[in-house]
Length: 273
Image (cartoon, rainbow, N blue to C red):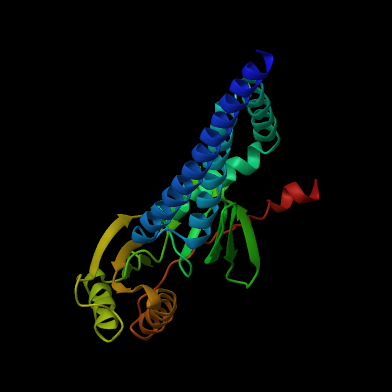
Protein backbone atom coordinates (compact mmCIF):
# COMPACT_ATOMS: atom_id res chain seq x y z
CA UNK A 1 0.00 0.00 0.00
CA UNK A 2 2.82 2.36 0.90
CA UNK A 3 4.55 1.60 -2.40
CA UNK A 4 1.34 2.39 -4.30
CA UNK A 5 0.95 5.70 -2.46
CA UNK A 6 4.57 6.60 -3.18
CA UNK A 7 4.03 5.87 -6.85
CA UNK A 8 0.96 8.09 -6.90
CA UNK A 9 2.87 10.85 -5.15
CA UNK A 10 5.70 10.49 -7.61
CA UNK A 11 3.32 10.71 -10.54
CA UNK A 12 1.60 13.75 -9.04
CA UNK A 13 4.92 15.44 -8.40
CA UNK A 14 6.03 14.58 -11.93
CA UNK A 15 2.88 16.22 -13.26
CA UNK A 16 3.66 19.33 -11.21
CA UNK A 17 7.19 19.43 -12.60
CA UNK A 18 5.88 19.03 -16.13
CA UNK A 19 3.30 21.80 -15.64
CA UNK A 20 5.94 24.06 -14.08
CA UNK A 21 8.27 23.46 -17.05
CA UNK A 22 5.44 24.16 -19.51
CA UNK A 23 4.50 27.35 -17.62
CA UNK A 24 8.12 28.48 -17.62
CA UNK A 25 8.66 27.78 -21.33
CA UNK A 26 5.41 29.44 -22.38
CA UNK A 27 6.05 32.36 -20.02
CA UNK A 28 9.61 32.78 -21.26
CA UNK A 29 8.39 32.77 -24.88
CA UNK A 30 5.59 35.22 -24.06
CA UNK A 31 8.05 37.54 -22.29
CA UNK A 32 10.29 37.61 -25.35
CA UNK A 33 7.31 38.35 -27.63
CA UNK A 34 6.09 41.15 -25.36
CA UNK A 35 9.53 42.75 -25.19
CA UNK A 36 9.94 42.44 -28.97
CA UNK A 37 6.54 44.11 -29.52
CA UNK A 38 7.52 46.82 -27.02
CA UNK A 39 10.72 47.56 -28.94
CA UNK A 40 8.82 47.75 -32.24
CA UNK A 41 6.30 50.17 -30.72
CA UNK A 42 9.11 52.37 -29.42
CA UNK A 43 10.83 52.24 -32.81
CA UNK A 44 7.63 53.39 -34.55
CA UNK A 45 7.35 56.23 -32.03
CA UNK A 46 11.01 57.12 -32.66
CA UNK A 47 11.90 56.77 -28.98
CA UNK A 48 15.60 57.05 -28.19
CA UNK A 49 17.46 53.72 -28.56
CA UNK A 50 19.07 54.04 -25.12
CA UNK A 51 15.70 54.46 -23.46
CA UNK A 52 14.20 51.65 -25.53
CA UNK A 53 16.88 49.15 -24.50
CA UNK A 54 16.74 50.23 -20.86
CA UNK A 55 12.95 49.87 -20.57
CA UNK A 56 12.99 46.62 -22.56
CA UNK A 57 15.55 45.09 -20.19
CA UNK A 58 13.57 46.16 -17.14
CA UNK A 59 10.33 44.78 -18.64
CA UNK A 60 12.02 41.49 -19.55
CA UNK A 61 13.49 41.06 -16.05
CA UNK A 62 10.10 41.78 -14.47
CA UNK A 63 8.27 39.33 -16.76
CA UNK A 64 10.83 36.57 -16.17
CA UNK A 65 10.51 37.10 -12.40
CA UNK A 66 6.73 36.69 -12.69
CA UNK A 67 7.18 33.55 -14.81
CA UNK A 68 9.63 31.99 -12.32
CA UNK A 69 7.34 32.72 -9.36
CA UNK A 70 4.36 31.26 -11.24
CA UNK A 71 6.34 28.11 -12.11
CA UNK A 72 7.46 27.71 -8.49
CA UNK A 73 3.86 28.11 -7.37
CA UNK A 74 2.86 25.26 -9.70
CA UNK A 75 5.50 23.11 -7.98
CA UNK A 76 3.84 23.84 -4.66
CA UNK A 77 6.60 26.13 -3.42
CA UNK A 78 5.12 28.98 -1.31
CA UNK A 79 5.87 32.25 -3.09
CA UNK A 80 4.43 34.68 -0.57
CA UNK A 81 7.72 34.88 1.33
CA UNK A 82 9.64 35.39 -1.91
CA UNK A 83 7.29 38.22 -2.88
CA UNK A 84 7.74 39.78 0.55
CA UNK A 85 11.52 39.63 0.21
CA UNK A 86 11.40 41.11 -3.29
CA UNK A 87 9.06 43.87 -2.11
CA UNK A 88 11.33 44.78 0.81
CA UNK A 89 14.39 44.73 -1.43
CA UNK A 90 12.63 46.90 -3.99
CA UNK A 91 11.62 49.40 -1.31
CA UNK A 92 15.16 49.58 0.07
CA UNK A 93 16.64 50.03 -3.39
CA UNK A 94 14.03 52.70 -4.23
CA UNK A 95 14.85 54.70 -1.10
CA UNK A 96 18.59 54.41 -1.71
CA UNK A 97 18.27 55.48 -5.34
CA UNK A 98 15.56 58.10 -4.86
CA UNK A 99 17.46 60.89 -6.62
CA UNK A 100 18.62 58.58 -9.40
CA UNK A 101 15.09 57.33 -9.97
CA UNK A 102 13.86 60.91 -10.12
CA UNK A 103 16.50 61.71 -12.74
CA UNK A 104 15.58 58.54 -14.62
CA UNK A 105 11.86 59.38 -14.65
CA UNK A 106 12.66 62.91 -15.81
CA UNK A 107 14.98 61.52 -18.50
CA UNK A 108 12.19 59.27 -19.76
CA UNK A 109 9.84 62.27 -19.99
CA UNK A 110 12.44 64.38 -21.79
CA UNK A 111 13.19 61.66 -24.32
CA UNK A 112 9.53 60.84 -24.96
CA UNK A 113 8.13 64.38 -25.23
CA UNK A 114 11.27 65.93 -26.79
CA UNK A 115 11.15 69.57 -25.59
CA UNK A 116 14.63 69.81 -27.11
CA UNK A 117 17.01 67.75 -29.23
CA UNK A 118 20.75 67.33 -29.59
CA UNK A 119 22.11 70.48 -31.24
CA UNK A 120 19.44 72.83 -29.85
CA UNK A 121 20.44 75.90 -27.85
CA UNK A 122 18.42 75.87 -24.64
CA UNK A 123 18.18 77.50 -21.23
CA UNK A 124 17.24 75.00 -18.52
CA UNK A 125 18.26 73.94 -15.04
CA UNK A 126 19.99 77.27 -14.43
CA UNK A 127 22.32 76.74 -17.41
CA UNK A 128 22.24 77.75 -21.07
CA UNK A 129 24.09 76.07 -23.92
CA UNK A 130 23.95 73.73 -26.88
CA UNK A 131 22.62 70.25 -26.10
CA UNK A 132 25.37 67.70 -26.78
CA UNK A 133 23.85 64.55 -25.26
CA UNK A 134 20.61 63.42 -23.60
CA UNK A 135 21.05 60.35 -21.41
CA UNK A 136 18.74 58.56 -19.03
CA UNK A 137 19.99 60.42 -15.96
CA UNK A 138 21.49 63.70 -17.20
CA UNK A 139 21.84 66.12 -20.11
CA UNK A 140 25.17 67.51 -21.32
CA UNK A 141 25.30 71.15 -22.46
CA UNK A 142 28.12 73.05 -24.15
CA UNK A 143 28.19 76.68 -23.02
CA UNK A 144 29.07 79.63 -25.24
CA UNK A 145 32.60 79.70 -23.78
CA UNK A 146 33.04 75.98 -24.66
CA UNK A 147 32.54 74.45 -21.22
CA UNK A 148 30.68 71.18 -20.84
CA UNK A 149 28.02 71.25 -18.13
CA UNK A 150 26.20 68.10 -17.04
CA UNK A 151 22.75 68.88 -15.63
CA UNK A 152 20.62 66.25 -13.81
CA UNK A 153 17.43 65.57 -15.75
CA UNK A 154 15.22 66.15 -12.71
CA UNK A 155 16.60 69.67 -12.41
CA UNK A 156 15.74 70.34 -16.06
CA UNK A 157 12.32 68.72 -16.08
CA UNK A 158 11.00 70.42 -12.95
CA UNK A 159 11.86 73.92 -14.21
CA UNK A 160 11.18 76.12 -17.20
CA UNK A 161 12.81 75.03 -20.47
CA UNK A 162 13.53 77.72 -23.06
CA UNK A 163 14.41 76.28 -26.46
CA UNK A 164 15.91 79.01 -28.67
CA UNK A 165 16.33 76.61 -31.59
CA UNK A 166 12.79 75.23 -31.71
CA UNK A 167 11.55 77.63 -34.39
CA UNK A 168 13.07 78.39 -37.78
CA UNK A 169 12.72 82.17 -37.41
CA UNK A 170 13.41 84.45 -34.47
CA UNK A 171 12.65 88.09 -33.72
CA UNK A 172 15.35 90.53 -32.68
CA UNK A 173 14.06 93.00 -30.08
CA UNK A 174 16.10 96.21 -29.95
CA UNK A 175 15.46 99.49 -28.17
CA UNK A 176 17.13 102.64 -29.53
CA UNK A 177 16.95 105.79 -27.42
CA UNK A 178 17.10 109.29 -28.89
CA UNK A 179 17.09 112.72 -27.27
CA UNK A 180 14.02 114.89 -26.88
CA UNK A 181 15.60 117.45 -29.22
CA UNK A 182 15.95 114.87 -32.02
CA UNK A 183 13.45 114.34 -34.85
CA UNK A 184 11.42 111.17 -34.17
CA UNK A 185 10.31 110.69 -37.78
CA UNK A 186 13.86 111.13 -39.06
CA UNK A 187 15.13 108.54 -36.55
CA UNK A 188 12.43 106.05 -37.61
CA UNK A 189 13.26 106.60 -41.30
CA UNK A 190 16.93 105.94 -40.60
CA UNK A 191 16.10 102.75 -38.71
CA UNK A 192 13.88 101.60 -41.58
CA UNK A 193 16.69 102.30 -44.05
CA UNK A 194 19.10 100.19 -42.00
CA UNK A 195 16.63 97.32 -41.97
CA UNK A 196 15.95 97.59 -45.71
CA UNK A 197 19.67 97.39 -46.47
CA UNK A 198 20.19 94.28 -44.35
CA UNK A 199 19.64 91.28 -46.66
CA UNK A 200 19.46 88.78 -43.80
CA UNK A 201 16.30 90.37 -42.39
CA UNK A 202 13.15 88.54 -43.48
CA UNK A 203 10.43 90.34 -45.43
CA UNK A 204 7.75 88.22 -43.81
CA UNK A 205 6.91 88.75 -40.97
CA UNK A 206 7.33 92.48 -41.47
CA UNK A 207 9.65 94.29 -39.08
CA UNK A 208 8.05 96.86 -36.75
CA UNK A 209 9.45 100.23 -35.66
CA UNK A 210 7.50 102.15 -33.02
CA UNK A 211 7.89 104.56 -30.11
CA UNK A 212 7.38 102.59 -26.91
CA UNK A 213 8.22 105.04 -24.12
CA UNK A 214 8.83 108.68 -23.32
CA UNK A 215 11.41 108.24 -20.61
CA UNK A 216 12.94 110.69 -18.16
CA UNK A 217 15.96 111.30 -20.37
CA UNK A 218 15.11 109.81 -23.78
CA UNK A 219 12.54 108.71 -26.31
CA UNK A 220 12.68 104.95 -26.76
CA UNK A 221 12.04 103.44 -30.19
CA UNK A 222 11.52 99.65 -30.45
CA UNK A 223 12.87 97.96 -33.57
CA UNK A 224 11.78 94.35 -34.12
CA UNK A 225 13.01 92.62 -37.29
CA UNK A 226 12.76 88.87 -37.99
CA UNK A 227 15.70 86.71 -39.05
CA UNK A 228 16.59 83.07 -39.45
CA UNK A 229 17.43 81.50 -36.12
CA UNK A 230 20.99 80.80 -37.28
CA UNK A 231 21.53 84.51 -38.11
CA UNK A 232 20.20 85.91 -34.83
CA UNK A 233 23.40 86.73 -32.95
CA UNK A 234 25.38 88.10 -35.89
CA UNK A 235 22.56 90.27 -37.28
CA UNK A 236 21.77 91.69 -33.84
CA UNK A 237 25.39 92.74 -33.35
CA UNK A 238 25.61 94.24 -36.86
CA UNK A 239 22.41 96.25 -36.39
CA UNK A 240 23.63 97.77 -33.13
CA UNK A 241 26.85 98.90 -34.78
CA UNK A 242 25.23 100.20 -37.97
CA UNK A 243 22.55 102.17 -36.14
CA UNK A 244 25.12 103.84 -33.86
CA UNK A 245 27.29 104.87 -36.82
CA UNK A 246 24.41 106.19 -38.94
CA UNK A 247 22.87 108.04 -36.01
CA UNK A 248 26.21 109.80 -35.47
CA UNK A 249 26.40 110.79 -39.15
CA UNK A 250 22.87 112.22 -39.11
CA UNK A 251 23.15 114.06 -35.81
CA UNK A 252 20.81 111.76 -33.87
CA UNK A 253 21.95 111.61 -30.27
CA UNK A 254 21.81 108.55 -28.04
CA UNK A 255 21.34 109.87 -24.49
CA UNK A 256 23.18 108.29 -21.61
CA UNK A 257 22.85 108.71 -17.89
CA UNK A 258 24.90 111.57 -16.53
CA UNK A 259 25.04 113.56 -13.34
CA UNK A 260 25.78 117.26 -13.14
CA UNK A 261 27.62 118.43 -10.02
CA UNK A 262 27.36 122.13 -9.16
CA UNK A 263 29.92 123.57 -6.72
CA UNK A 264 29.00 126.82 -5.03
CA UNK A 265 31.70 128.84 -3.29
CA UNK A 266 31.00 130.17 0.21
CA UNK A 267 30.92 133.96 0.83
CA UNK A 268 34.38 135.48 1.52
CA UNK A 269 33.38 136.78 4.92
CA UNK A 270 32.28 133.32 6.00
CA UNK A 271 35.62 131.78 4.93
CA UNK A 272 37.62 134.37 6.93
CA UNK A 273 35.65 133.69 10.06
